[in-house]
Image (cartoon, rainbow, N blue to C red; front, side, top):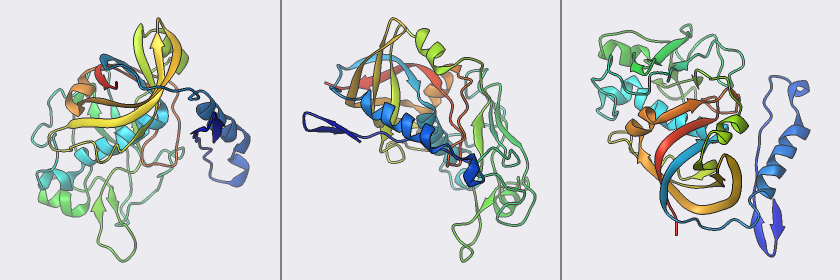
Length: 269
């Protein structure tokens, strides 16, 4: 946390590893400090439609919400905007989304799921086309398919459900700085608030509080806060402009990567 003229700004970052020697606390602390410092003096921006560049931590949270719509149980209960859409074009053709708990870099990596079945790489969206959903034994049987090795449990006392374990977008090749440089007018969103409560998994309506830095002519500009970004999940998937190459493996069920999405409403002053 940093403070200037009585106004406090918070910043956070992660270092993830499978042993203490893999943790880089200095790097995490430095990134957290940078995130806090660059928000000093943030103001509420004017409302407009623009391009957003999502920071990897924000993208990971967005994918976490999206994963609830790719859940076989949610589909059976009519709680997914993707129900009955397998085989349809649901995203920009260069969007590929995979759940792969066999990837040892993932925080949720595991050889077996909560039912003891072997996990595997499951392609959910390929080239923008919806290929299927994650399933437990129960949801797979009910839907006429089979388990995808995605059973999950809240604890050993609970019955298994199903869910994504290690969701990730197929990365591009460019850094976040390169992505920002290609945006004429937009905002780099470095954090969001209330994301899970601001998304309807059935209608796809999306609205969340955010803060970040304006982008003007390919350059990062003034810090802004207390605004919302709004669209629908369906439209955002089709409006993806580019996926970055800066994959970040975070302590979440999804990996982060910088993501450029066009034509998003920013509501501020």
